[in-house]
Image 1: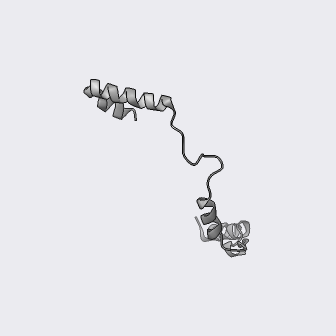
Image 2: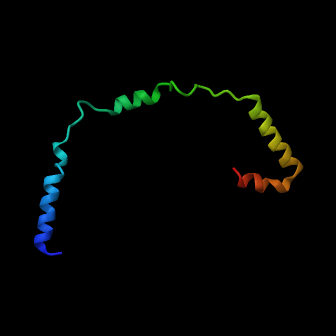
Length: 80
């Protein structure tokens, strides 16, 4: 590219992109608000998840298969 093309592109970029310092600034520090929100319990997720009987049965079945057929352990680990 020639220098006049570089100058033209530079000027177009200067006119199309505003300077960073001209953007809106936060009114106050946002970090304390973020820390407060992280400490609050989530309204979506329960505090302690309940483990159902099906989860225990599934874990027990995997343990029985691993004990009965030790060669299946690499296959089970592969699918984790």
